[in-house]
Image (cartoon, rainbow, N blue to C red; front, top):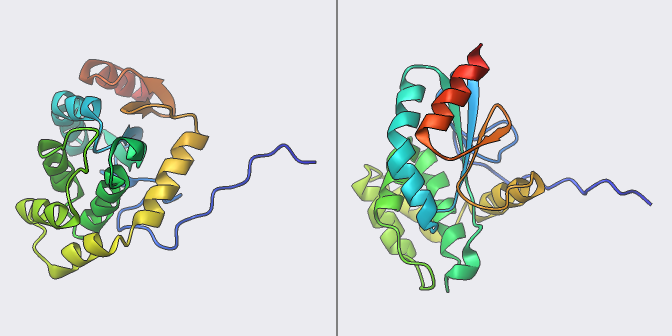
Length: 192
């Protein structure tokens, strides 16, 4: 009897900009990989994005890091409509439209409270329009849940890797506290 874990099935299709193993969206092309595991319903992720987002943007802009966002459906149980998975799937549609980061910021800026229904698919599409995603394909993709299987893959892969909460930040595969200072220090150490 084998004790090896079963491999996680890849999604049928992944968004534009997906990582090689299809479990995140890659932003930037720097030599140091920073993985960020978030849930769009998580208030701590919103605080992390507000505190660390500008630093991550700067590091990407300087060509120092490849930032890999892993938008999880981790907190579906804290919503009556699986909001976490639907928001993650909609971020895949935003990546197809070339506006993943802008949409990520907009989702956190419009974060609903835990315990309720979350935003509707129509509201997720409207947030996309605010982030510059005005093509009909974006709204259709959100409403049709075209990346729900991708979200399940992102979430399952993260859990298999030991991610047990959000936000989780890894620099070159090593967990670091989710703060701008520790991320900058870890990135600098990885370059040496």
